[in-house]
Image 1 (cartoon, rainbow, N blue to C red):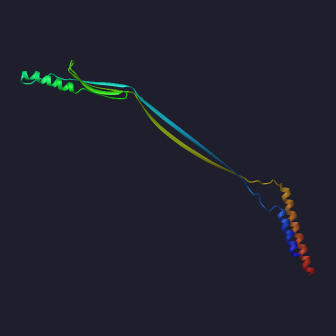
Image 2 (image 1 turned 90 degrees about the horizontal axis):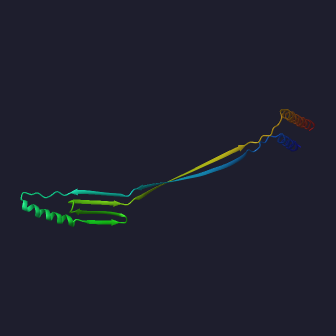
Image 3 (image 1 turned 90 degrees about the vertical axis):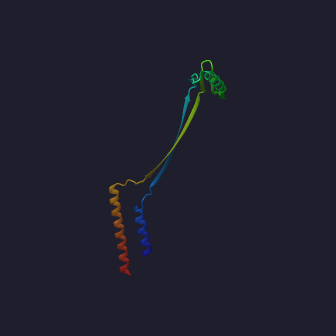
Length: 167
């Protein structure tokens, strides 16, 4: 009999709403990736450059030696002529006997210099929303529930004391 009364008491208390509602969890993840590629192109123009150096006439202490030295100097300078080519680029060196000048020249073709840069950025955002549901219960309903629970406890205690007195 006591076990039965105890079970009735437990059932009536659980019916009063002693348990809580579980919260609802909502989670979302936002991931964004941005990539920026940058290319710089630098172009140089075609360059042609010439340097001319005038060779002075040879003057020594002996005038008969001047002409001989001048001829040898001109022969030696004429042998210095050379030209180098690589694609559209050229460079050279020669002696102009008419103007009596040493000439150095360079012809450089236009070039393109390319610089590349890559910037990679990743952003990750996690949003968690917790929703706790609570039912709306009017205050008057709560008061009546407490009165009913107290009345039930008093009734159970009254029955238990009556049973003890008879035994």
